[in-house]
Length: 349
Ligand SMILES: [Zn+2]
Image (cartoon, protein in one colour):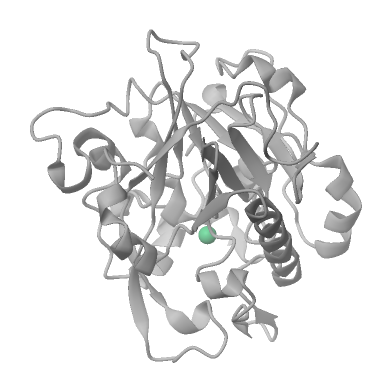
């Protein structure tokens, strides 16, 4: 595929930011060389992407897509085996969660008026990955289609290796009849085997024949293709407005979103590709620490693959920036949130 510009009739989306809980992270787990005594309370952001097309399953002019659901409103509903990790991330703020932010907007801007109903008006939920601080409360989105990276359903059912035992996940977290895994990337096969050699990598779950998931009509043709400098993307609506970007390494099935908001600007939603923008620019390195099993680990399931992904994202963004503006937003970027409160839903980027 050619560069970013040049499509005959360009389609743009809007992006609004949603508070979806806050958690507290020790800095030294994320950025090499950070002060071991410093812990920072950071957001776990969600995003509302509005696409100017009528959804398949209801009468409306706009398709509503939410990227990531943040922290669960009810912390006691995490699996018991996950509870010690959650406790270690306190203080945790769960109000507002993603649903409350959709309904009320930032600072209750809508007053008594409900801005968006998560049960009836959200058409798609794309999860960057299924870590506890991104999975939120999927049952709130009772008519949405969930779209996740390849291997995610297997991970929720069976876990994957020593860092991700099955008991940390709820196998019924996502509604199977309304959940679709993106295709596995065939070109990734060999490098995945190289990176994940000897690990219990979750396998792809094909969509069942009886699925209730109504996808964009282009979904039959979804496959990982290069876009600009990004080697593996899926054009979600088939009109170059929303690209899912394969971004492996953090955890199985991790994906990002690249969305076009005007003729001169994209927004890159980076999920947990890193937790500090200085890692993306190469100014800082991924922290590595004792894994408690005689080895070294990072917050990523595969540190080498996560580094390769960061380099790919940086190159992809820099290539796009030769033509237009690209704003990068990471899920846990506290400083970005503080600078951009005026752009939270019902505001937009
Ligand atoms: Zn994560």
